[in-house]
Amino acid sequence: MTGARVLAALVLLVLGMLPWVPMAGMREYVVFVMVQILIWSFIGQAWSLMGRFGLVSLGHGAFLGVGAYTTTLLWNFYGLTPWLGVFVAIAAAVALALVVAYPCSRFGIVGHYFALVTLAVGEVIRLLLIAERDWTGGSLGLTVKPAGTDASLFALQYADKRVFYYGALVVWLAGLWVWRRLDRSMARAAMEAIGEDETAAASVGIRVTRFKLGITALSAALTAVGGVLYAQYITYVNPETLAGVGVSLRIVFAVVLGGMYSLFGPTVGTALTIALSEYLRIVFGVKLIGMAETIYGLVLVLCIIFLPAGIYGSARDLFRRRAAVRVAG
Amino acid sequence: MSNLVDLVAHNPLLLMEAAVNGLLLGGVLALLALGLNLIFGVLDIVWIVYVDLVMLAMYLVYFLVQVYGWPLWLGALAGVALGTLLGVAVHLLIITPILASPPVNQLLATGGLLFFIQSLATFLWTTDHRSIRLSLPTIEIGGMFVSFARLIAFVLAVLVMIGLYVFLTRTYVGTAIRAVSQDRGAMALMGADPQRIYVVTSAVGGALAGVAAALLSIQYSVHPHFGAAFGPITFMICVLGGLGNMVGAFIASFILSEIISIGGVVWSTEMGYVIAFALFIVLMFVRPGGILARRQ
Image 1 (cartoon, one colour):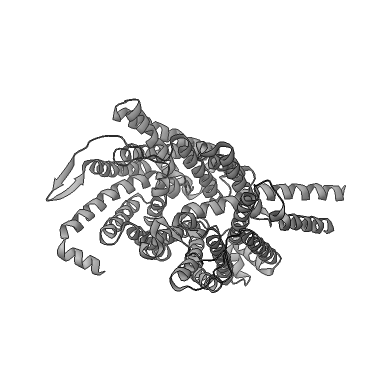
Image 2 (cartoon, helix red, strand yellow):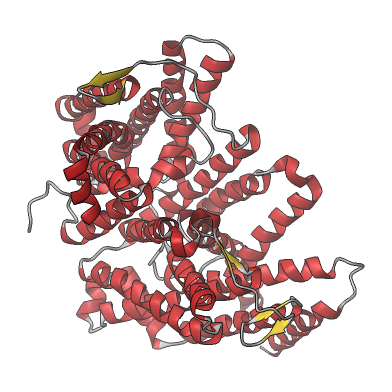
């Protein structure tokens, strides 16, 4: 265990120092990519809170969109600081999650039917954002109104992107903490039992609906926070990048690629996908649009067939098995 | 609501035209749903990639007819052949290894394939919209304009649906397909080979995707996001109609297409889809067995 702690401390030290390392003019870019990885990893962790128990949602874009648009609209039209707006955003996302999850749980909609219902919810939010173009700017999206200064705590806008790097780092760590807390709680045992067999779980006294709603609300709330953070960082929101099937599938696939049953699975999956697309973009430029996703899609299919625990999850299991053999032998 | 009242009072013809166009869009959706309903509804295997297979066949029809100058009927046949091959390939390469795992995994694996096909299409053929330049007449009925291509699609959708219904209920293979959907294990005990039934069904489902592609390519342009545009609605039709219920899916196609078409005229295209999706979500809760199912 101490070995793991030392490693964790080292990784944190490297991550903490990263924005100060001189990288011959590449620093801005590296920090930019790292913030993307941290934010989307956090969102992936939020998704995997549900996904690992068989609650596969294909509509997390809905919570992302609700979160990002709520703070942006409140700021642009009413001047409400995102620090307060984020609570409204969380409340809205949780309300939406409960409105969808309660009937799903009551009427026994699970597995791939649950996935299809959530997919429809994601599309409804995306289409509503486009339809209400008077406020939201429709498919053109919406720019977060500039605060007017280089650094504004009130508006949560900073010209220096390193601020966002540290913000995203803290949020990512908080996401890991939530994941671990859940992993070691009674709720995990209850959710696993529900995922295996709902009727059997209910018969031993597990409150199926309460646990399902709780985990869905938690996942939606964290996803909304991710959406707010992303909107504040990019200072631009768009229905295609923050809601609908496209982004929802992207979240799911990154997590599945890394492994949804392990603490660092979502992060590894997200880092790999973002790094791959950035690498191909730099090496081949715009000549190869779609190439990164083509490779990624293929890897994904192979992963689901041969490595259902994901790349990180499978590697971890392999090391654990080796270690167990060494101890036993 | 006031929009609707306004429209009925002042411009009933516009509303009528929307209703007729909705009817014809329903034919297109019904056509798309046929093959999916066979695979998703009858076999209970989730090919989230289904409409992207239609898209690939549409690209083939486009290239053969527009670039290589093949006659349309031959291009259409090639599209059906490609659909059949793709159907068998999807089953053998992706579904067979994970047939025993939860349906959600099948959904994710075919979702990966969707990602692959969509990106490969973007990579190979860019995001251009490509359509076969075909001048089919527009028919005027009492001041309303109706596209002839859509009329053909509508009529053929009805014919194919009847053919599929007869195939499923009157032939040996059709009966075997319905049997395997009820109990995957029992089929083997009855001396029938489930693997063969799966392959045959996937081939038929793929061929239906090819038929849809051939008919859609005379009225829609094809682009890499074609699957994303029609995929969700096609799945919803299968669920709404009651899985495997061909008649139910047919009716569901028209309910959703009318909502989309009339909603599009009264409010906006997006709102039409919003109402259709919201209806799907609500019906999923109150009528999980589909619109034709009896209440328990």
